[in-house]
Image 1 (cartoon, helix red, strand yellow):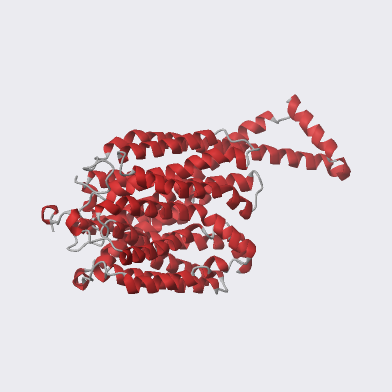
Image 2 (cartoon, rainbow, N blue to C red):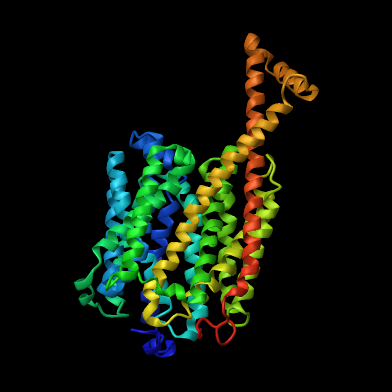
Length: 524
């Protein structure tokens, strides 16, 4: 079907009613669980490691396997939604996610946990883009300012509070509750969507031309790419034979996937949405949003844990400010969407991001809740200010027939942005720590008066250790030097992120303003 023959947006949106809203909110809660589970284990990996007698390398796969599987399902969900219908796909996804959560909670070995986590990520991944697509197809345009902030809030809040929720559950109960907490809500979401969702009908004829080669290429391309980005910084990138081999698999899979995308009769993913300027620029912004969302959710805890020595629970309590600001911002952003050019909101959102990270670039070893308060507030308000108009401009101006497929691609860019951002942040941090350590070692070498005075003071303070006092003082001084190197490196990363966000402020003008400023829909 060509763009010229597609029905107009207004004619495609069904009437608004309470039953449809309740069905949609049930789907939103399912999406919340799926996104929350990306990060919920991150603060509790050491407890899972101890509980399953796993090594540090093995337990990392509890998170990595979920991410790899999910990133394959997200773009595939558009095709499956058209094949099976929203009702069948979402109910099956919610039920499978709930069952895999139970299996994760009852795992007795690390191998079982990794298997169930991969299946949990793959099956549950379909819920995320399906909710985004439904938001722009089942509600009339005038209701988008009500619906869009809900989507934006859930998509950004869930990964932000994931470590906090995980820390509380593990601290109060045990790591098993990271997964058991999904059971009752998952069952309710499954029943609600199966009973109430009637947005579309399945088209089983699509299965006749299912592109198995394209699916294999996409799985190899995205799965291997996610692994390279996750493990690359720790393994020295291409110094590792495994990373090199996995990168080659990703490249080969990418070639196969893109070849099939342009030649297959019924491709797994239709890349035609990228011909729309709002969609490709919105996807670019979504990619950078992923860096800001997942990168900062990682960077703040690194500082609080490695420099301040905070526990998982203390880190969660410190970072909860961002979540509160998102809740406050959501209704404000929804109202502004009807009055303000969404491109201006995107620019202001990324400017807020930049101001927050610029302030955080002056971080010292003594920063705690109050020093981090303003950067985190700016982050929370900016996430919502960016996310809602980006979603609306990228997806809200597409023809209805393209939205299911485009939603998968759009959500994929955010996840890949997070993966790329974490890889770059880790690599940059490692390089800058090494650089600052070299410079600091020169400053504390023998012959520097201040360094010798400090070492003498530390030795005197540890005099009760007798002959080991000198060695303990040197060890203490080395720890101080490393701590300062980490602090400076984190400040450098914040500054680089500032430059990135500032660049996006100027790119906001690339998007086309839809007819009717601030409206969710519009023409091209």
